[in-house]
Amino acid sequence: MKRQKYFADASFYRKAIKIALPVMLQMLIQNLVSLIDNFMVSGLGDIKMSGVNIAGQILFVFMVFLNTICMAGGIFMTQYSGAKNEEGMQQALRFKLIMGGLAIILYLFVCMGIPRQILSLMVMGNSQADLILDQSQQYMFLMGYMGLPVLISSAIASSLREIGQVKAPLFISIFATCVNTFLNWVLIYGNLGAPRLEVRGAAYASIVARCVEMALFLLLVLVKKPPFAFRLHTLFHVDIKLFFRILQKGSMMLGSEMLWVISETVTTALYNGRGGADVVSGMASSFAIANLFFVSFGGITTATGVIIGQSLGSGDLEEAKRQKNWMLTAAFIFGIFMGIMGMLTRFLIPIVFANLSISAQSICDKMVMMMSLFMPVWVYVNAQFAVSRAGGDTMMGMLVDGVTTILLILPGIFFIALCTNLGPVMMYMMVKSVDFLKVLCAHWWLKKERWVKNLAVSAE
Image 1 (tube, helix red, strand yellow):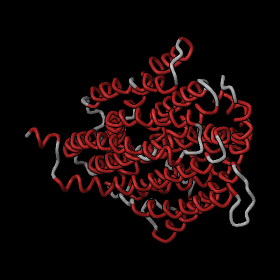
Image 2 (cartoon, rainbow, N blue to C red):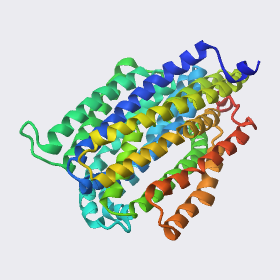
Image 3 (cartoon, rainbow, N blue to C red):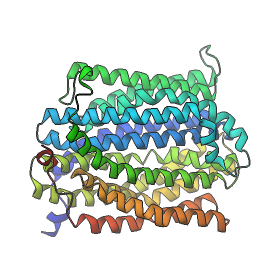
Image 4 (cartoon, rainbow, N blue to C red):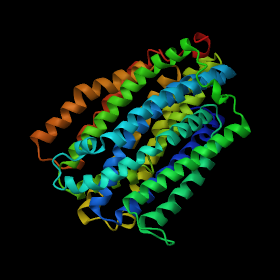
């Protein structure tokens, strides 16, 4: 009985793996692109790599914002998929595109209107700030052109995953990755007779790859006509009541995610102030490596959201409760496995980042080890949030992430930065220790079962 409570039969895990594995492979491929980008840009030295990576932090904020919008629509997309309600799925996609369009306006203003002012916040106190900013500004301006392609690709790809069609986004991502990698090789160093564009070459390669990716997703929708597809002229045929219902649920998620990303950005800026370009490039390269095993987050959250969301949408609430325990157990075991895999990625550092300084490589190595040790906790808490959001309970994320960020993380990191001489790796460890508390708070909240709701019925 105890075993049945925490472990399902093999067929359940096969279903979860069928959903999670293509998502993880897609993210792995995308993150390999980031790693290849870092590898190629690192050949230009610490300063130019630092410039690209602080601009990447701004893109990271936009991507989190956009992904949160997609997750909000995805809560309803998954449940309407379980209920076989095509109109509901179409409304969920409209929400993603309209709200994402508003996000792009802000993104363009930051990238093209005030890039240096924003970027300077990321290197306050850094001894080589001006040199880093010169490189970062030109890269960030060009990245503004990625906004629309990223929105369309993200909205369609997430919708496909939420209805269980996970293979197409994988194959499209593979092709776009090949385009990006090839153009990086051509444009950064000026191969095949192309001009040597260095930092700008990396930006141009990303823009072209994203446009190709968008075109392939649009072609897929035109040919396959998935159930969430609608004609372009009906984009603004919005069910206002449902739109604001999704927005209400999404606002909690947006609040918690933006608090988290703000805390990540602030802490990164404080880490960057602990030295010169070696600290910035060392920390950035560690995340480029860590992203290879961070793919587990997307896999576990997608599988959890799809499986539990479809059970809730079809009205099988008791089954959803059982699935919650099974997925959380699997998440913890999977987190241990991914932590071990993370430790093995340390062997890539002297190969991929051989052109960085010894100091930068040392920081990278210590950070990768640190993040590997935290993997079981991070995978587990991501699964907890996915369970909560599958039933539309977005309050949990807001409270757990929001309260710990406001009361513990931000005051704590400023205290450490101002009152100690700790290096960036130890600062990171102390900040992330708060995640153990998040697990306990989320566990207590999930026991209330506020997430056990059929939104496909209540939204009608």
